[in-house]
Image (cartoon, rainbow, N blue to C red; front, top):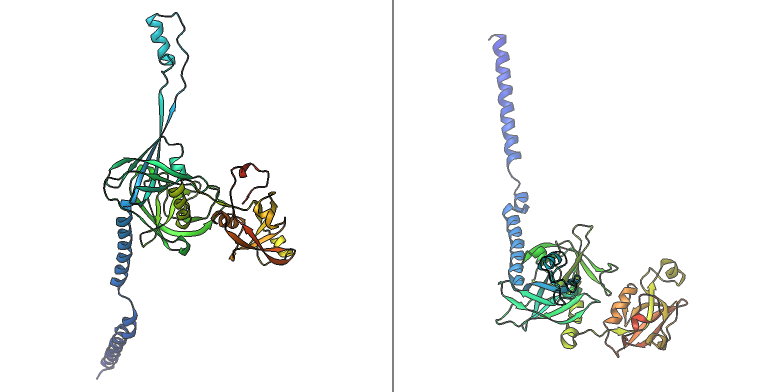
Length: 398
């Protein structure tokens, strides 16, 4: 056998061995691991999950949209009347010239100016009670309520509460209407889904989706009593008064405002606050709030440390009004309220809300810190006097 044939045979043998080894390795590596196959979720499961979430949004929209209404308002005003035609001028050419530039002469010549407004609302009672924002119906001479089925009704204001920016409007339904279910805003968690329904820019029955971005927002500058839900669900002009809804189809808030300079920053009034206000508006046409007659201030970190307190949770008594429940109970300037009827106080605005929501005549226990000593003070809640806003005391009274 020649030397060349030997080399060819060796090379062929090596190639066959390499091919066989590669086949074995491929067979071992290419075979799926049963354990991995068993644990890896199939793509179909992900699609099914997405479709289930999608159907959740669809179901909520179908459930709640019939309860959401379009609120149109009209404010009437008379335009300023021009000067009267000078006496003794019966020349028809002069009269035409005068009227062309100054309008028709005479005391009844003023034209009526009608300024339209737009908002949303949600039906909360089968009697035709609609919940909305106060600023939507403020100053309205006419209110037109349009349902999801395009039926239209005249609405009348039943009660308003400017301090929370809430109002109840009533219309007379001639058929059974869909009523929204009210949820529990105290149970909200940041990150939960939130669905806003309303009529932005007149686009009726618009649904947008986002999440609960934050709760307990105050110092927004919209209302006297603020405890807003923040959401990134798209809210635009015309959405005001419409519902913010959870995935159960329950109303958890009333959409109220947006940050114009930002994007995806909207605020809604928590439905639990709304319930307390609406109950009084329906029964009395107004809201009766509790009052202590005390001016409150934020608790600074320096003051908290000097009193031996951890953190800045609490409200500092700035002053009390003579003869008020706070003064009669013995509250003093510099006292720090840390609990209201066993409810830990977050800040001075929290105390404001707790007092305002308390029943008039109720006796409550305030836990205060005075000169590093904790003590309990009992105080009787009174009704806010009509001249409370005119009394001389620092801001943030309660």
